[in-house]
Length: 267
Image 1 (spheres, rainbow, N blue to C red):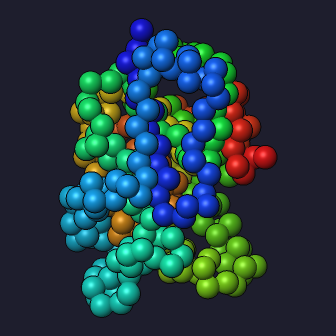
Image 2: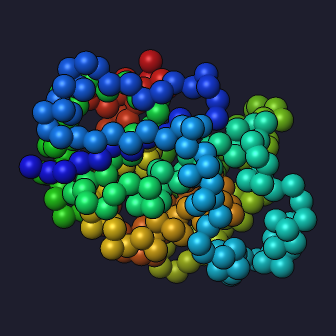
């Protein structure tokens, strides 16, 4: 019997859906002893304690083509993550990355598995059975998550974002995604001789094995890339998994139609 923690966050916009469990699902959790950790606007003071990355930006930006220019840019311009809160929700989206990525700073480290769930999910009966099946099927992996259902590489994700920028020339989209920074971010990853751009993940549900607690440098740097580059955590995840030798299994399923769930984007 595994000791499992479920983690979710609903920060900022009060109109956003909160992670919801059916009555049957809640009863299953009680029987199995599942603990649920929810983070919301009431936890902002605690979360802000971990807002600044533990990894310096010099380490993140080192090796980029415009290293000096980039440092000047983040020091002197209105950087999106410094707006508190951002009118376009960038700040709250970054704050939500803290329990998603550096959960070990917030949740007791006595669980066998830590499951991140996007707040837009509705979870139904038998979902726990499905998760336990995944855990038993992939016991040796550090992370179990879903492969991207539509794209296969971070380059394809960047290409789509460029297409969307041209299609939706709105201020909110342009401020949420700084394509100049994201382009440099992706170039940094692609030029690494040890990185092969052949994987992309959804990351709306992440099952972390407790083995990841021995690899928190990976989690810290992943958060730092979200802070200094882009809150598109899908872009940095494959690169850093390779860098830190994280054993990830990508489940081939449409995450928005995952068994025994509904997702706001899949309705």
